[in-house]
Image 1 (spheres, each protein chain N blue to C red):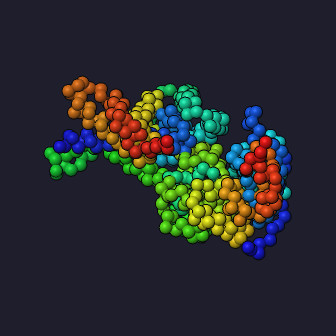
Image 2 (cartoon, rainbow over the protein chains, first blue to last red):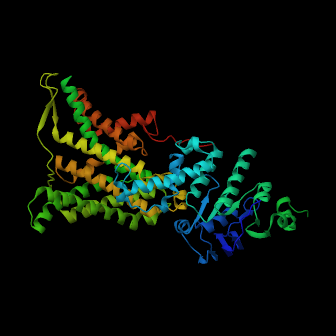
Image 3 (cartoon, chains in turn cyan, blue):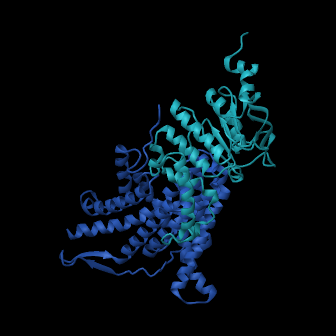
Length: 264
Length: 309
């Protein structure tokens, strides 16, 4: 498929347990993600996939366990700190800035990389002030992403007016604008038709290939998962029941029974 | 025709001030979903600080230059408002993230009383003057078109120009700068904003500071017209019908709502007053809002909330 080399472990999740009151969302989950790979997390509804992503992203704070990212271990981190470390995400239920244009949405992903402060930004001078120069530099980068995702015709359209499949692309674009090392994708293809799914798969593989971005994704469509991922973690009822290449996982008896049910 | 236009202009000018206070409400509501009842108290607090600093600074530092005194006092009052914004975020709102809107509203009600009290303790409770050199003399317009022309207060005209410049500056800031974009992003979706590394607490401090800045400008203009006194805080509450009228989430709505209220008040006072008795200005805004809400529950420019069923 490609010439990319899978590197060392970049993200290491160890013994994560997460409870909401008496509900155990995750129990003792461990897995790792290697640099440049596409790692999928699958499982039936309610298996704890999104909870896992939310732990990595700093939205939830697990009661036990640790997450190591590029040698740095953390147990509780705010979303902002995680973003600063180079982890970006997209959302299962789109969380775009609906009133803002496509360009502004993606530009907002550059926010962390902008260096000028609010007072410098208040100074405008026909494109020559520091803030304006910075803005146009970042704008160039954003235009590349827009080209890459093939959404040029919609760049000034408020995102709320775009069809669902395109909104998903903008969500991906905003995450890409952060130039993340790891990209967390929460059901990037949910609710899409076959053609849209193919487009999205292509974008994910291209990102992975061209920028070397490590991808962790949650997905329900098995054929997509088997096609694009290097390794797969399988969760069921908050526990890990399988881990390995798509081929290995497909043959795993526990995984088959979780998806198809067992006979009693 | 002459008297009608005169009333109309008078109404527009006082409407501009309502708009200014209303913009403060809208800024905060948009970015944090908090209905900031304390906006009126912030106007009073800022005006008090401005009025007293412009007396204290020359006395303390021993100079006698009105312009310098005003500039320093304005800077001092602005610093004060930023400090207030920071403290509110630190001590009140930061602790109440994800609470119900009604809880946050009650918190701002508390801030209102606190600011009213603190302002009068620090700065005194007399009536103070703000003199920023706005001309007090009236002028006559269109004297050739109408007999006698139209009488316009120059001070009102200056105030309107300042307010318009402020509004233009704010909207440029929101549309064109990275910080403005971050503010709009937070207004749209808190969680997504955090995931791309926008710090909510800093954004809130900026928004409350901006609202403090707007309150200061409104306070200075109002104070130089009427003097700085406790009733400013109450007067500013007239902006409540304005924000409901314009829609809580719309800055243009706040501006137009303010103008409608100002004009409506003055015209009704002059033309309806003789028929149904005076004092209409006091309740006109609220009745107007009732009628608007009957027809458009989301306000004139507010976002229509459509729920998917």
